Image (cartoon, rainbow, N blue to C red; front, side, top):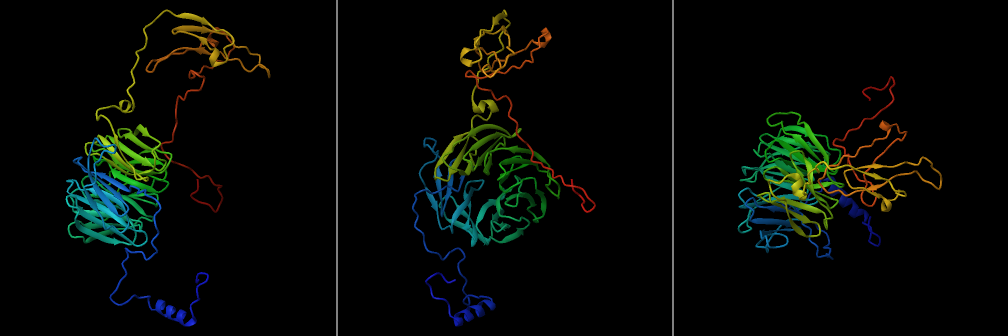
Length: 476
């Protein structure tokens, strides 16, 4: 200090500043700066892109709210439009910064928003959806809010922030009920249980926590995640807690700590995406889960086993906003490039296989006369494979001579197969006295190996081995 070319403060000026700081650096009497306003030069924007930070679909399926920087727009649903929504009918403004979350109330009459200015203030608000009028504001956090959720009965508002705190508010009066502390990192998401008695939170401290709403008691810390958790939700039936985050996994806990402190057992830990999971959303009936990740992929899951049903890859941009329709027929994506897309989920009665594609099953063929096909050399290359029509018994001889000019002998046989058919391939070598150590593999038509089994870890676990000596204890 000071910047190059600027005059240095004089000794007298430095003494005044020091005395002011020593006295508490108080501002003018009766005046307090507006923490929502940053006194910085205005930087001109050089792009027309307006990222979508949050979306919500009203439970009756008629309206969609879209949150961006400084505003929320309300649109009617229009099935004929490419994005599934019509022109803007109402606009909510006056936000101090980016609107990070928007939610319709259960009856669709009001909207709840979360916004704020980084390092300055967090602000939640309740709005009338019919005329975009402000009902009530909630200001108490000292940093940007990431979420604001209204309890199912509409009496309690929960807000979470980068300041690591969760505040519960009286939704009718705007008074603070209690502050929930215990997270050691930013709190990115909160969710009420369906009965409104419990609250789950997801944090940058690599944990989710479960709280009792009535008194703020922490009922459990879900410590299995290995990186930041960005999204958390209760299943619609209230029996499970699901979370996702920077460790690329979705985890499912059985929710048992309903009234007292208990350990909620981890039931499933599923590798889900090749990038951090940023949003999750249940269908209203709880049979489907949608996840969105930073690697620009979106997935649909069957919640009976949390198995993958569909992959929507190569999104044009990261979908940071996600909402499932009230009837569960589709979900809406809002992306960082400002685009939106409505994606159909499919029939509610469809099985997992039917959701992805309809495959015609071909029954096992009835018994037919067995033909004999002898190999015709050369048949080491797919293009020269000996043709066989099933059912058939193929015979051949493997040349054991191997030289630099004569690679190991293989015999290839080509046959036709259709999706849904069941095939049995059996080798008879040692049983007939042959010394052949046989190996059979089914390849694609062009000779490529076929993936038969895909293995993936379902739990993250590790052990640390250390040397044992007289000064060490409790090591493994």
